[in-house]
Image 1 (spheres, chains in turn brown, purple):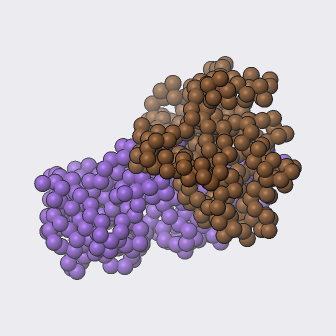
Image 2: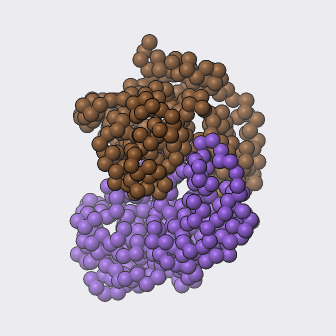
Length: 289
Length: 327
């Protein structure tokens, strides 16, 4: 692990330069160990994809003492089982929807292929025979929430397939100044769901009618807490059409809709042994088989 | 009745928000600290009117609001030199002043600095959300309806405490911005990604605050582009040499997308992303950024952790003197 101070109030730890579920689990184990250690002076513990960050008060704990304390947790974290009791969530996605389409047309000059669409471009550069095959792959296997952030409640999603099969696309050449709320996007190897409307650089594939951030806490399934996702959640997308999108949107507004969620256990070793079989088991949990 | 004590926004100013000391504890979910960008000025304003240091105030950016007072109260304006007026008559800055119900609080044009802090005895009593009254506009959270103030808004004031008018912060305890600005930086994070020559150039060049300077971050222009140490980009990072696998972003961290324009993240920071960072502005200088105007020439100066902690101790000592002066 590579340790560096972010000024006098942050300790930054890079677990690995490249993304992998193994690096994510090490980050999660380390942040869990730091939290459990209850180190005085620590105010924020933030896991990221393959790194993590701790905010601290150097008037309470000297930077080098914090560094030593965190380094001292490495062995304990390495010994932690790479097993996570978590949940799998099914999210409906209206791929190729008119709202992201209108937005992507508006920012076409910032795109690699102005004459194409984000979906068609992503399908082509990932070797898929058309948009439908690409959508089938995007919705075909689950995604792992490896980080929550950028803006409030935005999940970074890591596709749960062998690396050779992972969808990879560059970000826009220059970031857009606008992205519709609840856009399902992709940049580098990461998917995301834009929790709020705003700037963004990820390719836009579709939109979900399911809110994932509600500062008013009025959405039925966001009353307990305004942010839906946690690191370690597993997400399965389900393609829907315009009619179902509009129906779900209305049901959400009426307080009658919530995403399908099932408790499950993720075991990294099981996944690495046979991703397809592991995914099948996870998705079965979702449908109560 | 407490609910009768309120202020009415006649003109909102350019970007006026309710802020307190901030909302720690949710950065891991993408909700940043928020809170006043110049925390010292915010604390001073509150102490002047007899509030707890962490009471909610108005942070007025570049152009002040016009406010109709619907309560007898005590006000204090600190931070930027943006002269305040009561019913058109100038009132001194960094000083507590008695104001009567019906009076209009307005501001002259900004002379120096960027953000004025306007405290009222009792504090701005908007709802506490996740432990704070601060506004986080990107997330439509906290403050007054999660947004900057608009004409016609009314803000309740809390019950006033022990304040008395005429208290003042002496000149020596007012921190005013300098031009050119100097921001001290602890190199680190992904510092190793740039060449030695690029690292030297970053500290040698004079930068200027770009117009894109807000509560999320301050962008700088005018220095030389950074050259990167060549590498094969790690899986998941993206193809640009300034890309990393998306990580957390410390407050004060300096990211340089494409190696061209540094951005220093501030209190409404995006909590993470895929751009490398070359270091972090030290905590002692974060308040200064909140008082920097666009086009301010700026030098970044390299310091060690020891120097950062020394500067932090100086800031703490100054706050101690302020507290002793306004007990």
